[in-house]
Length: 83
Image (cartoon, rainbow, N blue to C red; front, top):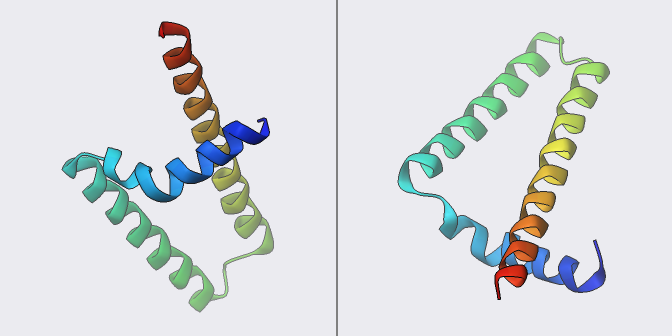
């Protein structure tokens, strides 16, 4: 990701991404975040949140973020190509 695209990504993810969810997706996302937090708390309370499980969650989040950035770049490039 070059510097210009990084600036655009940072701006879009901070100020514009939230407005791109329809009501159903926003609700689904909020519920998913809530359940993930509750499950993490339960695992910590039971002492079953292992370092490996914590790393797995972090790695899946990294993959999701990289995929979102790639989708953003693809959409930006497509828009520029159609210009």
